[in-house]
Length: 112
Length: 112
Image (cartoon, rainbow over all chains, first blue to last red; front, side, top):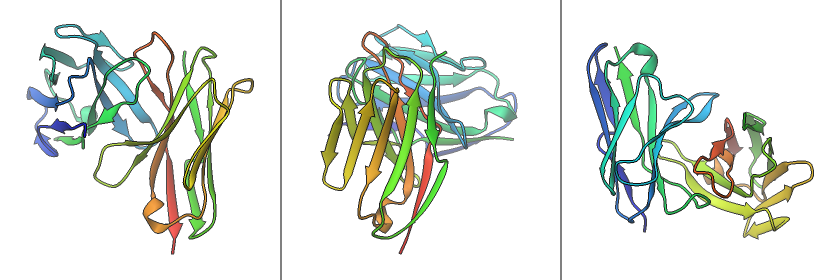
């Protein structure tokens, strides 16, 4: 069974703090993704990575950065958290471009 | 840009009735169409998918149809049960592309 885990289920941070969200997958998948989920807007892609140390911007990369030093781990970084980054963050992975994505349980981030 | 429109945003049915969710995609090169179910507090999980060389696919109470000419695809759930209550997302992706485009989601309520 594919497993994608995220470091926290709930996180509360203050405006201006640096925030790290970590994601680990155990199926040796090439691709990893970070999405943001907001009501009525579906899943919006922030960044994705198709290989170690490789990253590509998604649709809403502003205010975020990512790191992929190892194949199984993909981190999302909020350099200076703002209240409009309060959201549900979902990590996903898949073995190839046309394959099913496997999602983690999500991290609900609140920025005060 | 690439877009997937999903309707309705909310759907309420009586237990035992059928539910239909419809999606339209904009990129004619799309060739993979997964459907995800997201239960409360969990990440989305694949429930069924279809590729562009197939017009229909069925798995027990769930079926998906694809009309490539009209760029429409639909999810059909028959004999709905309370445990079918969740948010459903349609999505589209294409060969050679890493990105999956998601619809905005449909919240399905099945009343017992």
